[in-house]
Structure formats: C-alpha cells, structure tokens
Length: 206
View 1 (cartoon, rainbow, N blue to C red):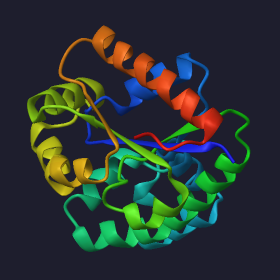
View 2 (cartoon, one colour):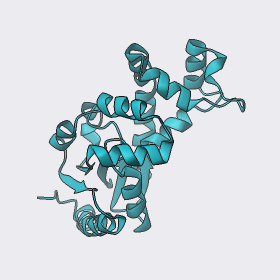
View 3 (cartoon, rainbow, N blue to C red):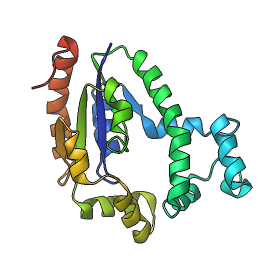
View 4 (cartoon, rainbow, N blue to C red):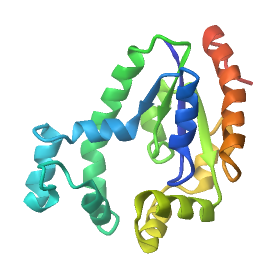
C-alpha cells in the first residue's frame, strides 16, 4: 500500500497552499475538508440528519448546506459541535481509507485539519505526519483575507483548535510557514524528494 503522509496545521497556517505544492509535483492529495463537503451534500443521510436537527434555516437558497452559518453556530454551541463531529468524522474516515486504497503512487498526502484532535482515530493508517506551523498573527491575517470572517470568530476558532504544542507532539516533520511562498515551496520540494524515496522503499524516515 502507498506510504500515507498526513498534513495538518492550525487555521490559516498554510495547509492548502502546502498541499497544492505537493500536488504540483504529482502527489495524490486526499483532502478531509473536501470529503466533509461531499458527505453533507443534499439527499445524503448526514445532510438529512443535520436538517432534522436545525431545520430549513440551515440551508442556502440553492438547497445546499449553509456551511458558514453552521460553522458560526457550532463554535458558540460546544454540545452541537460534538454532535456534528460524531456524525461526520466516521463518514470522513471511511472515505479517506477508501481513497488511500486507490492511490497508485509511492506516497499520498492526506490533509486533515483536526488530526491532533482525533489522532487516535487515524494513527493506524498514517505513516508520517507533517505539521504546518505559523505564528498566530499570520494565521489570523491569512484567515481574515481568505474567509472574510470577523476577528472575534477567528480568535475563537483558533482557541477551539488543538494548541501548537499538541500538533507538534504528533509531528515527524514541521514546516514553518512564516515567510514567503517561495520559501515554503522550497521546503515542500525538499521534503517531496525524501518522501518519494521513502515511499518507494517503504523505509521510515529517521
């Protein structure tokens, strides 16, 4: 089976950018966030359960789930956040495992934003963990630019996530993303060379 490399980091750390750099080198990318969108599409069992819990107000005019509204709600209602995670995470894990089985490449990148929070659920299928680490000020700025969310909501989202120390604890590789995109790309390029050799030989990285 392919060598499975998990990529994680806090909100605004640059996970998606790093993943795109890996993709540019031809590495298969499995994105938990994209899978999460798929499992809550209209007519899916998860969508119907969410609709039953929160009603029609949680839908957009086109019938799809209002993810922004749901995100704001769960970050101010911890019990509902737990309910939603218990609903979605098993479904996401199944899809990730299925996607890994289909990979025809020495290694793949699995982007899992909440890996530190749910590491026990993924540990058995992961061979290597990359953490993208960034200063809180950088995370804050990037998230405001990307999501147009309020500063207050972003601060709450950062606080709700695993701490940098918790993420670093599970990391085999840490890529610091406080500088330019070209510097991050160089780090990804160097790591890709190592991971490709490792994937071919299936020899753990020292």
